[in-house]
Length: 306
Image (cartoon, rainbow, N blue to C red):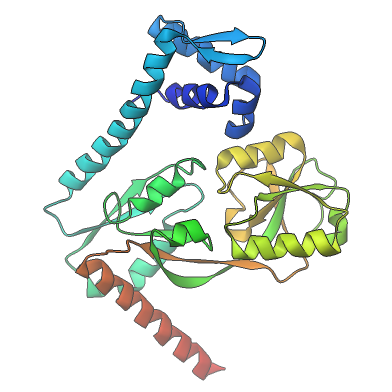
């Protein structure tokens, strides 16, 4: 509902630099400048002045900056309210889906338990894996959508939603197709010596923090580069463009066609699960209990066959 270049404009204004904004958005400074030039032509307004000390807003730019934040938030709220109104009178479970958090694992659950919810329909709701906005999306559980399947041990995520654990995904690494490691079927940690390993910065993920501590203590030959706290497609693009190594997980093997995902000879994995609101309604909680009972029954049967 709004021009997405406004997001870039806000980042440029906050950073005061094309280069700093480019690093945050994981695109080139040239691409940033092109977007700003296009936005100024589109609005027929000069929004920023380039100075020796950085970027400063013009008087017009300062007005657009303030109003753009309102426009963006209002647009997102409007879309959310419209979706809620559309399905308000139906018995519908809305399921979030994105590139990094696809709905397919939910569908696998649904076909195991949907006989207990014959009156319900499913509606898939797309959302973006934007590292700056993902927490706002997660906070909309219960409004924009009822469920999503997420890979998560994030303290920030789990402070704003509930999660029913479903399993774990192995930690792996991704490299460009031209990388020296791309032909390997298994990576030893020593293979990473001399490489730059991209991973989320310290402080939010128990698994990643533990892994980082291990690498820093026992494998200092690996240089670690911080990524944003949460991955989005820009992180995979940076891996492909720089030739760095990216810490990833097995379920993201098809995210970027220019990258090869390879298992590593270690035991690190990360949990994933069914995510839902902290204040979920009765039907959502009934679904969660049904899924949990189904998992427990399956586990009992599997144990009995061993």
